[in-house]
Image (tube, rainbow, N blue to C red; front, top):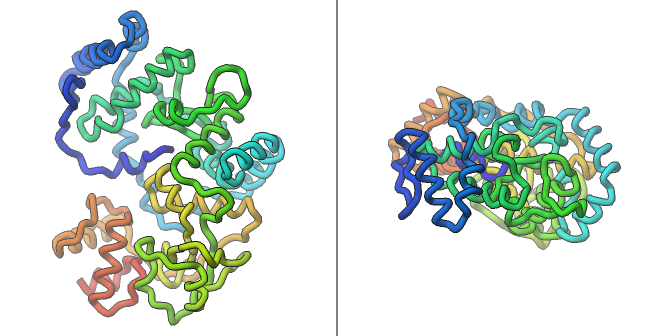
Length: 391
């Protein structure tokens, strides 16, 4: 799910195409024609280009899916409870045993824990069972034609063309997610080119049908993005009530040993004392609490949703034997329309909260925390009715 949420929340802007690039907007047929010219200018043979684009069509369902991602408005506990089930956990344990040799290779060559990939595999496609039924080329061309952020999708069209040239992509039968991700762990075409691994040795990189290809490719991409072998990524902790809450959030990093001196203790295992870590309070000071280590930040290169990233990282811990997290008794947070009102108020005060969308993103969290400090409230970055009333 490479950076899909980041794509979804970017503010719409005017398309400024590169020199010689097909211009977004206008008729789709003209856009296809200009894209074909661009492909030929890149050195692809005319016959290959014509066959690749022969049946391309716009897909209105792609645009609809792009505009509607309401699941990210859920709080962490609700989101995690929805995605994580005993069935998924048990299936993951079973898959870990079934592909034990593949996971051994993943850990040996890329230093990525099997739990990390099992969590992605589960969330993205239910271990390959549901990989998406959108025609990938149609999806990429539709999003490239749309003028919200074509610069993110146009390169993926040509990456797909390169895969087609080598027999690893079909413009008519390759399907996946609405934003062009392919296979069991949902990778974009360019990521497949950059990090694809022929795990089963058949001479092709087929992420839809080969678990070995998919898992090794996903691991290689994580390493490429900065994954540090042998280090943790997330750890549930218990936090004292006397904590300075303004130190919470990804903006602040201290050694885990320094957090321990402040009274933070691990709920499972021991703290990685020498590593820098941030205190994460996804639902404020009365909710669950975690220390996030450097590897946690790599997750945001895969997906930009804080809630998704935290849930995936926590689920990876479950595969390593961690207990069900303590949800605590968080104050009721703002959501939907109320959160939009809060975002509007913060924006009028000069804060950059990003798009007014009712989603608690990094910008909104930072603004909330800063405003809480100014108002003398516990600065835990959790938006509540009390904060809205104070504003």
